[in-house]
Image 1: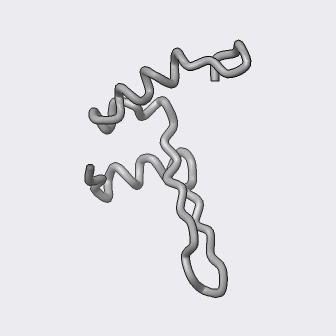
Image 2 (image 1 turned 135 degrees about the vertical axis):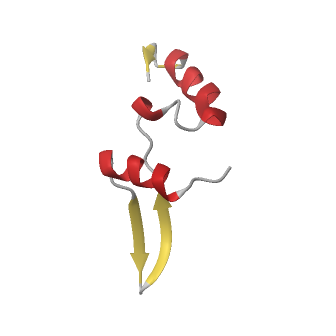
Length: 61
């Protein structure tokens, strides 16, 4: 899956991505994708559909 700049910018404008740096080296990165954007990347729609029905300790996640 490839995200173009426009897609990444839309995602980041609404929920900033997180970059973890130690000793000037990137050691982690989290691309945040709000459910409001689930249709922006069609291949991820099934993942979001699953999130909508998953329960943890009896509660929706």
